[in-house]
Image (cartoon, rainbow, N blue to C red; front, side, top):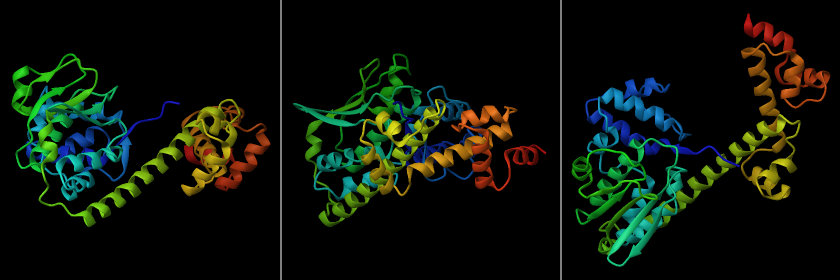
Length: 331
């Protein structure tokens, strides 16, 4: 099953700061992508929204290479939990390895890995398919800026690898990153001097590291909880079309035993039948208010075998019949 990829808003808050620092009103960008002024709301949002966000940012900034443009205005530190993992670790390398365990807190698209190859280290950020080039170009600049601050200027980038084949002029990349760029690479990656991994952290504190890791584990568990609930909801919607959506069918699509799915949902604080009921109710309301579909069609699309069963269920959910709900809503 293909799941919807999401990013945490913490990944984009520094970009909002960079827009403001560049002289661009971030509220204008947010307004163009349907978000309220005053900054991003808490939580996660679909990664697919990156394309619309960066298109709006490019037009508002008047910059063709807006990812690189904003990378120069990014703050060095963003107040992220992963940064505290770096700071409280014994060395820069230890901090990097700790942070990589929890990189999904920032984005589902970051499949990060560290490989040391002789005197060089390669930090792979994954493939990030179906995204605009501005996002990884900004991200590479943010990582270089952060690593330079964490190592007090000892971080030496050798090469940035980008998957897209067409980008900015070479000299612009060199100006922003301080190193050459290779386009058309197999994955997004940053190559740097491996010696910096041994750089001691002057803020190392084992007790703080344990506290930060405990918090990161809890946050990651919450992301995984929400991810499971989202996947189950999506599968319920797919299976209802064929009058299915049983716990056993959803578990099979997720490649796990039904008992294990029931247990994981219980740990997430939800019950499978409640998810099915909630999905049916929301879908029925939407079809009644936003379409002119006949009731018989809505009965079928919401997974009911008989109109009478649908009518009783809807009256129990909403307190009025489907016909009354449609008449009142459209009136």
